[in-house]
Amino acid sequence: MIDTIVFIVSILLTLILSLILGYFIRVWHHEKSIQASKKLAEQIVEDGKKEASKHKKESILEAKQEIFSLRKEFDNDMKERRQVVIQLENKVSQREDALNNRSIYLDKREESISNKEQKIEERKEQLEQLNSKMEIALKEQDSKLQEISNLSIEQAREIIMKRVEDSMSDEISNYIREEEDKAKIEVQNRAKLLMANAMQKYASETTTERTVTVVDIPNDDMKGRIIGREGRNIRTLEALTGVDLIIDDTPNAVVLSGFDPVRREIAKRALTSLVSDGRIHPGRIEEVVEKARQEVDMFIREAGEEAIFQTGIGRIHPDLVKLIGRLSFRTSYGQNVLKHSIEVAFLAGKLAAELHEDEILARRAGLLHDIGKAVDHEIEGGHVEIGVNLVSKYKEPAVVIDGIASHHGDKEPESVIAVLVAAADALSAARPGARSESMENYMKRLEQLETISNGVEGVKKSYAIQAGREVRVIVEPEKIDDLAIIKVARTIKDQIEDNMTYPGTIKVTVIRETRASDVAK
Image (cartoon, rainbow, N blue to C red; front, top):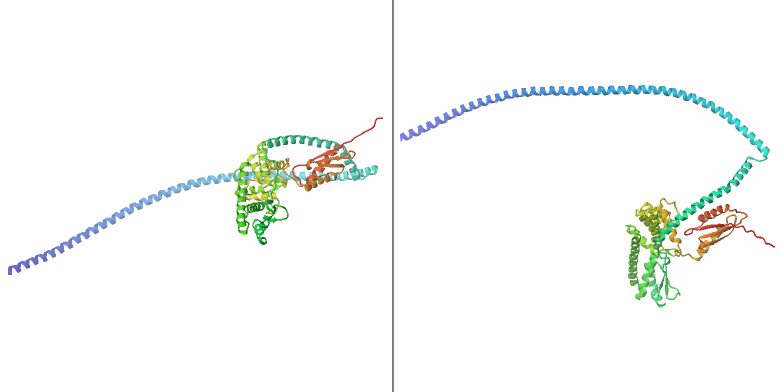
């Protein structure tokens, strides 16, 4: 028991001694580590100081080198600047010398000019004195001449001008006649050649057509069905189509009256369909009118596309295509405007080809030259003005606009193609069978031609012939000589152009004849 206790005590003492010894050993190692760390820290600080000192010396050295380099660059730059300044100073000095020399020259020049001005003033005074003396001498001379001749200055001037006019009139008239003859021969030959070449390459129908405004019906009983109970059918038809139906005593016919040719065509087709079907009431009328309107719209577009295809002018705005098709319902002096436009397009194209101009552009201008007639009954203004506004809106070429604006002489043409369009328009309208004219207008034009011709001094009698395309004038031979007839023809021509409206051209022929007769016995 005692041994066990002693053993345990010894073990405990051993443990306690071990712990104490371990603690002191740990403390010793800790102190030793602290000392080593201090030495290491001191070494690091010392090394850092040495490194910092080294870097400081290197930085100072680099800064000194950079300062030296910058200073060297600065010195070089200053040398260059000094050189430039020296050069500029030399130039300024030279400029000042030049200005001084110029100033000296200008001073001398001014002095010379002053001397010349003084001499000019003196000369001017001398000339004024001479002029005064000359005027006095001329007045004295005029006075003496008036005393000798018993004529005033105005009377003498009139006598001299009359003598000059009489002596030169024959020469002037001969010269005018010769030059006009030369010009006419050359122009006629060239025009005949161009027209012949153009016409032989294009031919069209010469018959005219009119817009149909009469619808045939099988019997007069159909008139009552068209009118309807209390007139409801005819009122519906008139309201939907915009035309007036005239149902009178004309047998088997109903007359359509309307200013718009397209509406008139719609009414004609609708009424024809209603008459053939036999069912006539407001509901059926609405259906048939709408169908007729669609048919006419389709016909208009197809007519426009066909015209564009025939003339080969290329792409064109869809709205212009419809307007071209609407021309098929318009007539001018009985001539269908669409066929007339196609004909003008071909003739203008052939003329342009002969003159080496743009044939396609000429055809385009020719086809569109009367486009304003498609809507001239809907829009205020003449068809030329309307046409110019339409094609300008759809961005047509300037040559086309010029051709439309000038084809009736409203403005001077600005291009060769515009002149060709005007010539083709006149040719298409003036050819035989192209247009018809009312008897009243025809007689009025003939009377106006003869009245204008008879009103010219020296004219004895005039006759309008060739359907008003020529007027032959007979002058009094004792009043008008062979040279003066040129002046008479020109006067009549000018008055016709100023006072008359006519298609094509009018030829003026002046005839002077002197006959002498005697009887042999």
